[in-house]
Image (cartoon, rainbow, N blue to C red; front, side, top):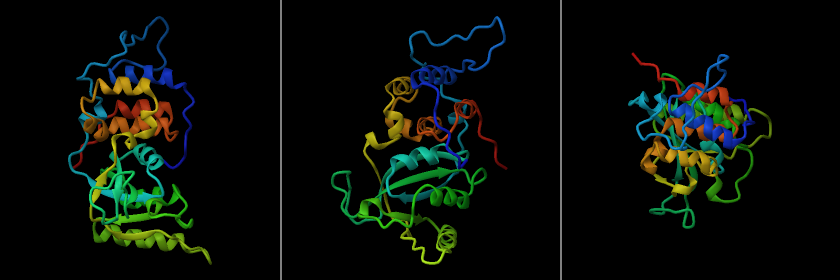
Length: 249
């Protein structure tokens, strides 16, 4: 899913529609004479976990990228079929326990848990290269372009795809490819940042996910953040939230 689909439905209406989807209520074109019942108090029952969360795979692999910032990548990668969860943070440096205002030599980074039977690391790399300009020289360590590889296979694929990015004469790619060491989770207000700017949606979601850790780990939340960021259509979002992960094996 490389194309970007701008969210055209008013977000207040989207909040109501998503609330209905998460509550398991039919949303969409109804037959003549039928009605759609929306939650009257605007609160979703705490046990209304969407199918895309309840069936999320236990076995996942991890990819860690830096693309110059982390708000937009959180939305982009969170919208992809096969991505189970996303989180943003800091990596690549030596400063212990970095924070946004005391980052030291770390870089803004996104970490992705994905189902390799649904999306490959090579496909994630394709999105990675397409989602930022690796030929722009970074003006600080905070906004570097970096692939943090977790194993030799990831390193080889990262090197191969970087070489393809450099194929044009005189084209210099500043992306570093280095081994992953440690990832520090960023502050809560950075997680699913675009979604957090829509209080109507956050109110609905807070009734479903009792802790912020649950909120960060939710596939449904990642997809909704992808919608708010303009990377998935509402129709696709509706289908995704109601879908079950395929059983592997």
